[in-house]
Length: 340
Ligand code: CP
Image (cartoon, rainbow, N blue to C red; front, side):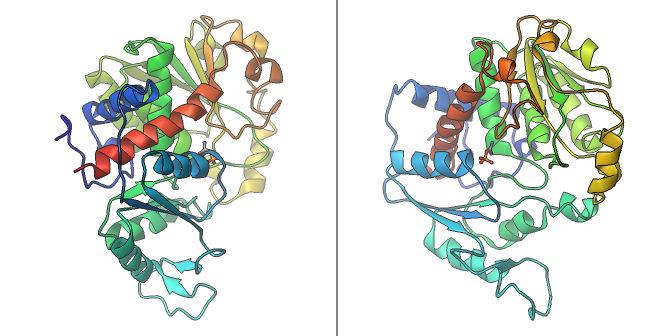
C-alpha cells in the first residue's frame, strides 16, 4: 500500500489535499522522471473529456496513460461525443442532446478514471465559481474524477509547477521568494492557473508574492486559504500592486494573465480598464532586478505580450521543464489514484 494513500479520490482542487499528500505525488513523479522504477496500470482505462482546446494536457495525459500500460480514451465533447447538458431539471429541448447525469453514470461503468477539462463560461462569476460541469461529473461519476482545468483550478498544472519549483530549488522550496505576476493579454483569461499555482507554492512553503494591478484580485477565499497553508509549511503569501517591488530579489517569476472579477462578463469594459494600466509585460529589464530568477509560465503564452522573447528564450526560462513535468506529475497522480 502507498505510504500516503489517496486511492479512489477525486482530484479537483489542490486544496482538497494536504501538502503532505501533494508532495507525495511529486515524490513519486520525481522517481518516475529518473526512471528509478517502472509502474504499471495495465488493464486500466482513462477516459478524458475535453470541452475546450488543449495541447499539453491532452498529449501529456494520453501519452502518460499509454506509458503506464493503461488505455486512454479521448473525447472532444460535441465533436466526438454528444454535446452535454449540465443544468439540473432542465427541459432538454435545446442544442445539447445528453445530460452529464447519464454520461457520467455510463462512462463510470467503462473507465477506471474520468478526467474533464471545462473552462468557465465567463458570464456569471457566481455560476462559474460553482464549477457546474465538473460538479455535475463529480456528483454522478462513481470512478475517481480528475480536473484537467476548470473554472476554479488547474490542479494538474499546480502539481507540475510545484515539481518544477522543487527542481529549481534542489528540493528546498521553503521561504524562497516566488512571485506570481499578472501579465497582459488580448482578452480576459480564467483564474484557474493562478489559483492552483498560488496553492502549490503555498504548499511548498514558499514566500509567495502575488503582484497584480488594482481590480485584479484572485478569489479572496482561496488567497486566505493559501496564506494558512503557506504558514503551516513555513512560508507566507503577500499581495501587492507594485510589480517592481515584487521583482526585487525574486527567485522565481511566474507570469500569468487573468481576468478581473470586478468586470466579470464585461470583457470590453475590462479591456478598456487595462488600457489605462502601465505595462505589466515581463521584460529582460524587469528580470534584471530579480535574484537571477527562473521564469515560469504554464503555456500557451503570447510572446511579446505576456513576456518578451528574450526572457522566454533566455537561459533562466524553465517553461519547457515545467511542461515536461506535466507528464511525470500526472503519471504519478494516476498511479496514486488507481494502484491496488
Ligand atoms: N498548460 C496547459 O494546460 O496547456 P494546454 O491548455 O495546452 O493543455
